[in-house]
Length: 175
Image (tube, rainbow, N blue to C red; front, side, top):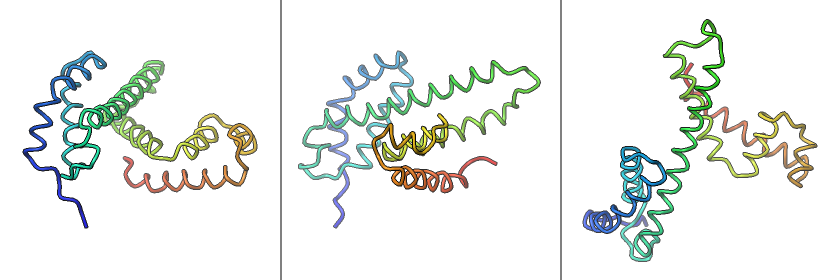
């Protein structure tokens, strides 16, 4: 049986009690009130969407810890996305002008990079490590197995799992 969702009065109570310190915490880390406000809103949306109105749930038993954890994860994703965008901009700047993609192509490439980043973030840690070591760093399966102290068979299984996620992601990528 599904748990009832968080009640509006409970959400309002949590917002009033926690929005001040959360906004300050995010703004200190981001150095920007606008991004902090966006992430704070996303944090409370996650609370609303994911927290059942049961007193024993972590969101209601320890709301500050729950909100801090959600905000931390959103902050990490935000910073990762910014880092990816900066790396892409630096790679573009290094290209001769005649080889630089159009504004539309840049947007599509950045969207694809963000989708791949999100897909990688959703993988289990060992699956992600195997995929990165094989596809980005160019290691052989035997080397990966030795470095991660797993069998080569596990490396193949993890690669198959990661590649399956890539195939599932492909329809969502811009053409």
